[in-house]
Length: 145
Image 1 (tube, helix red, strand yellow):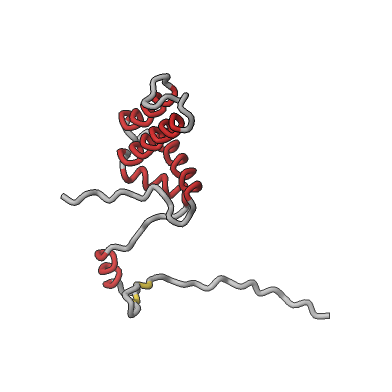
Image 2: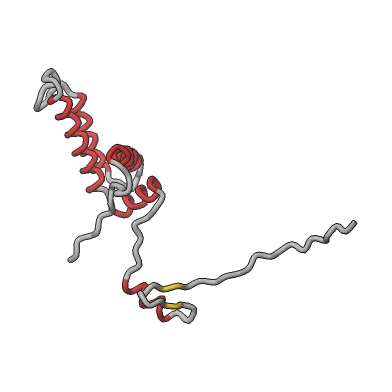
């Protein structure tokens, strides 16, 4: 059985800080979505509980290492939430956040469009199909003086 293709949870066209903001927004949207199972949400909430608990692998008293430890656990929790959530839900939220889709034309769609009587195929295999209507022009009377 082929593995389900997961949607991208980052935008390769923007920088690292913007991607982190996108992932934070995606995490927030997934936590609020009722289609994501509660146990999946619990994995992220467990990472938040680790951050606020006084027990740490690396104590926060150790400069810089304690904070990096907490940040790493938070990022792992976010990644687990994104990976264990249903793929269609993640794709929908990413589309809403970034404003574009990762939609691609499959070979079956290309073949179906090629059989269409309206379809025109270019040399490179690109299928062009559509209708065109000219907008109506208003015939305004000319003011002659």
